[in-house]
Image 1 (cartoon, chains in turn blue, cyan):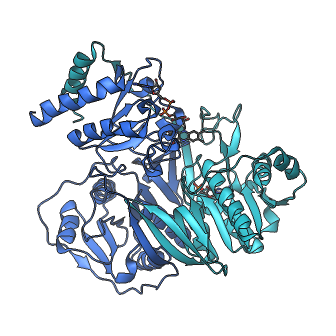
Image 2 (tube, chains in turn orange, green; image 1 turned 180 degrees about the vertical axis):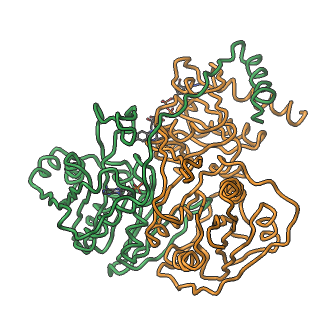
Image 3 (spheres, helix red, strand yellow; image 1 turned 45 degrees about the vertical axis):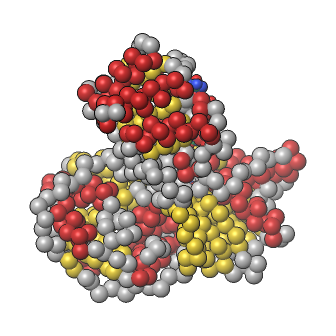
Length: 330
Length: 259
Ligand SMILES: Cc1cc2nc3c(=O)[nH]c(=O)nc-3n(C[C@H](O)[C@H](O)[C@H](O)COP(=O)(O)OP(=O)(O)OC[C@H]3O[C@@H](n4cnc5c(N)ncnc54)[C@H](O)[C@@H]3O)c2cc1C
Ligand SMILES: Nc1ncnc2c1ncn2[C@@H]1O[C@H](COP(=O)(O)O)[C@@H](O)[C@H]1O
């Protein structure tokens, strides 16, 4: 429908939309509601499960544009962008939103260039000002907030995961699925290998509700097991400071901060991390911040909601025990 | 092989950035400017490509005001062969699309086989320019690369991009754009010889008239910058470790409802 809010589906590559898609649809419903517009999902995939389509409808997608084909996986910009651009030109949506994930980040940038419109990347809030949508996005590593608006339409944006309230799972609705006839170009890049990361059995850093993170105070790679034990008990992901990563204690993908991942979990627990400005850049939008550090002057205490001044080798195992007791009755 | 690297000059990561008197810009007094950290990975990779192949040229390109020449100088000191400075008022406070249009025009003039950029510039934190340049040129691109190897015949590159939970390795035909993620390499420090040598290297300056791009203002308009609302003051939980932990777990559950 012309004037609709389009949400690009982020999925688990097995035919189901990820939770961040519910966040996109949730926020789109709120903003579209104020403008009397509809919300539609746009799913490019090599495989969409029936249940996945039902979920999108349940979250509030009035219509689902489904383009299914083997060439669409894995994501390649030169394949996806022409498909999306053709659809957007035909259907004239008011907004196209994606998530801040590896593929959407690049996809939305390329699409903006193709359509000749602005892209508000990594948004954490939206508001209507004088009838115009204004997006809020952190800049300078989260030291400032920038408010931006678009000159033309569609309004392209990517939304930071874990920030927007997801749409409630509504009553199961019969999804209204459109399978538009669009040509999928072959693409120039070919996948030669996908190297899965060794499974930690813990949630993915950028998607986790709780993150436990360790720094130089851990003194060595072997001690991260202390954090992993706590993480297992509370269902957390484990992250690290750059000092810990640069020392080779954790792979790069676990680094939190300006030159690592940006996270906004419900709960962040930093252990043996001083709280350098570059580290704060990656986690200051966490809802609740806990710090464990033996130095009462450590800057992390300035942003922490709760702190314990003490030796992490003593405090963290006690936390593990206490959470075991209250959460699992052990 | 000619490799072009896009570098942006940004405030040092330790800078306390403040909103300026015009709320659409930061106060620039006292700022130390550096090459955006991810762009250093891109420069380093370009130098390694030249070294590995034993031949080739590395060109650093930056758009921005006069001070940007400093950033280009440090790329030359690291070992880049020459530099291009786009001094165009249209780039002041430009959105990524405007920047990408200007830089794509430079790339067209220079006709390199490979363009390297940072995964994002750490001032606007958009992470769009690399992909947008690729789109404007009609080239493939791969974002957040952790490794890269150009085929001996110089026709393709095998590059690995970081995605959630995996590294995906692709073969891409050249020319293409790759954006550098931390972990790609360890950037070198300029040697004294490099710093001295950089003074003699060319920085070509291009003005608005030299590129033939029609920039008619940003598509994404900055309304204003704001300081972040301060976080409410925190609380140090006192007591012996055992009691403190017990109290912490209690407040996390009962007051903060965080778990
Ligand atoms: C361009 C640039 C980009 C950067 N990007 C990042 C980034 O993305 N992420 C990042 O994290 N950093 C980044 N940094 C580095 C940052 O400046 C800090 O150096 C780094 O965050 C410090 O890590 P740390 O807190 O683990 O180590 P330290 O600063 O050494 O702090 C260790 C802390 O552990 C405490 N401690 C020690 N032993 C114990 C114990 N037994 N119990 C309890 N506490 C203990 C100490 O009191 C201290 O506060 C960047 C720097 C630059 C220049
Ligand atoms: N003004 C500029 N001049 C040169 N390169 C730039 C400029 N702006 C952005 N880039 C490049 O594009 C990358 C992504 O920037 P951005 O999209 O602004 O986050 C940077 O890491 C640089 O490599």
